[in-house]
Image: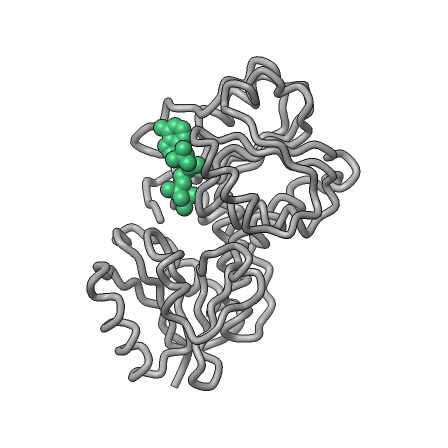
Length: 282
Ligand code: ATR
C-alpha cells in the first residue's frame, strides 16, 4: 500500500495541498493519497483517533489548528516547540511527532529568489506577530541577520513572541506607524498579517512611502499572488518576493519528513501560479 497523507483544517475546501503533494508523489514515483479533511474543533480528538486506527503516515495542519495540535501529538520537534505551532505531523512507528516547516520553507524560498540575501540584508522588519510570524521569526533567528525588528498592531502580542524565544538577533518592537516612519533603515520587509488577502485586496498594514530602493519586500499572502503591498513596492523600485514560494517549500519539507525524499518544488512553480491566478486558494 502507498502513503496515506492529508491535511486538516477548517475551512479547507479550496486547498491546493493535495494537488501539490500529488505532483511530489508523481515526481518521486511514490504511490499514495493525500486527502483534505475539514474538521470542526469538537471533532479533532475523534479524527486524530481515526488517523491512528488507519495508521496513516502523517498529515499537515492548517488554520485554525496549528497551535491546538501541540496538545495532541506525542512529542514535538525542537523547532515546533520553540515556535509554539505544528504544521506537520509524522507517524514515527506509532509515535506522533509534531514539526513546523513554515519558517524554514519561507527562508528557502527567499534564498532561492535572492542569492545576495546574506550579504545584502542586515536589518529586517517583520510585520505581524501571529502564528505565521512566529515561524518566520524563529527561522530568521537561525540565520545571520543582526537585526530583526517586529511591528504589530497589538504591541503585547509582539512582546509575547519575544518572550518565548532564545534570541540570537537584536529585536525592537514598534507600532505599525513607528515602523512606517523608519522604513528606510530596512533591507528586508516581511509582511505576515492577513491584510491584503482576498477579499480585502486593497488593504496594506503600512504605507511604503519611506522605503529605500532595492529593499526586498516580501509578502506571505499568495491570494492574490501580487498583493497591493507588493504592487506598491514594485512601483517604488523595491525587489519583491511572492508568498506562494513559501507554500511550496513548506510542503516540500513536510513531504521529506514523511517520505525521506528530497524534492525541488520549483518545477511546479509555474503551474501553481496559473492555478492561483485561476482563483484557487489554500
Ligand atoms: P496567522 O496564523 O495567519 O499568522 P494570526 O495568528 O491570527 O494569523 O495573526 C494575524 C496577524 O495579522 C496578527 O499580527 C494581527 O495583528 P494583532 O496581533 O494586532 O491581532 C494581524 N492583523 C490582522 N488583521 C489586522 C488589521 N486589520 N490590522 C492590523 N493587523 C492585523
